[in-house]
Amino acid sequence: MKHNFQKIYIIWALVFAMTAFSCSKKLDRMPINTTSNTDVFSTIDGTKQALAKVYGAFALTGSSGSGSSDLGGIDAGTSDFLRLYWNAQELPTDEALCAWGDPGIPDLNEISWTSGNLLLNGLYNRCIYQITVANSFIRETENVPASFSDEDKENLTHFRAEARFVRAYQYWVLMDLFGNPPFTDENSKIGKIAPPQIKRADLFTYIESELKAIEPDLVAPKQNEYGRADQAADWALLARLYLNAAVYTGTDHYTDAITYSEKVINSGYSLDTHYNDLFLADNNVNNPETILSINYDGNETQNYGGTTFLVNACIDGSTGDGPDAYGVPAGGWGGIRARSPLPKLFGDDYTASKDKRAALMLGTEYDITNTTTFAEGVKVIKFRNTNSDGSLPANASTFVSTDFPLFRLAEQYLIYAEAVLRGGTGGDKATAISYINKLRERAYGNTSGNVANITLPFILDERARELYYEGFRRTDLIRFGEFTGSAYIWPWKGGIKDGTSVADKYNLFPIPASDVAANPDNLTQNPGYGN
Image 1 (cartoon, rainbow, N blue to C red):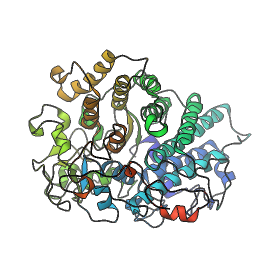
Image 2: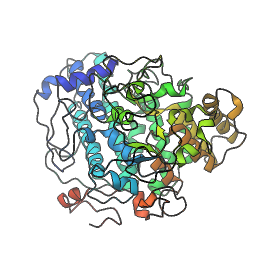
Image 3: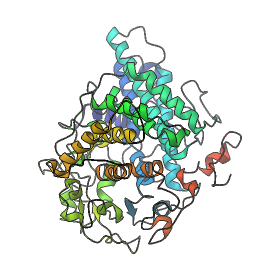
Image 4: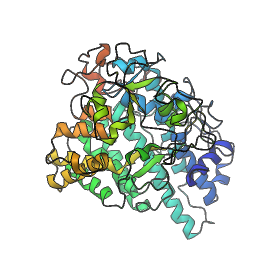
């Protein structure tokens, strides 16, 4: 088995399920127990298995293999959290374009979605599902069994803090993408309820308070099992939250972004020597940079989302040396490629760049004249199902064993630098430049790519060079005021080959029309999307 905590994912998926949820449109759903909750939570091992379901909702679509889903109304493989989140964060931007005509995909490509978009509704429901599972865990662990030892009690405290972290993360996703979602916590009524809507600024305050409250109950940085949250993950999410605070609340928190990014920077994590190793099948081994990941095992956590999607969708049978070279001999779906601005961030001819981050692309056909033709456009092979020594994982076929970094140290260097440039206090520009040059020294292998000065436009570009295809671009463009409107036009923005302006309403995704219809007294649709 690949990971320590990954094994617990499998136990949950194949043997144990804390709860099964209906396809109700309500936020908090009544659990249908196949095992008594009293039995499950009476031991620390059972409680850890229940925690695994909280984490497992990141990596698994359901409890019965690749064809099962916890969600209704959407294809099982499409219902995976990372696949849905990645599509929402990357396809509407200047980084990626998908050739498929699957429901919801063209609308994301063109920034023309409505409140009925299948993929956006799936993401919304997937986030709510994981929040529901976390709420259930927190509720069930409120009372400590008398049989628990002091060590058990300490572990339970950590478990509860981790469940609250996962819940805070998913509320951050909902806040960032949908703005004003429905809200429940462990104190909400169980069953078919009509949850209240929380305003974006109020949700910001809630997430901030939760992350600060759980900080002392999380284990110290680098002291948890791989794939579980520690204090550094908590600080990393706070830093990300504060960097985008002006978007969420109208009030900036750049000084706080500096404070918490520095906490992560000083917590013992370090840059991986080899950039490409961060995105390979053995990226769980000797990886000093990744703070928290979604863990995958191609044999045991099979679904058609996650990194299985990221590897297969970016190649077809004719890409490079074929699917075998990327660790998926039976794969290669031919869907996603880069829009021309991405490779051009590395120069007019990215293949001549000495920046090794550009080496994870293939092809020189920059222009895409037909959105449905995969052959057009530069291919991105950043994620691969191969090990760092070139070997393949055991039984490699279609499903991928590469873990996905939710948080890594490089992002914190970039947060620090941007927050300093935006006027945050407690940091300085010289240190910010030194952090940026750490990333560039890794990328170039020496100091030849170092910079003597940095500006905000440079930071936006550097974030793309460092973090492309990791699910950041939509949020970044919105923070810089370049996602909607005409300030920045890229190919196929607005569904036009040369690009066009789009309405500001698209800075937020709509609340699913089905949810608004089911809860009309509480839910108000985001502006521009009707009732």
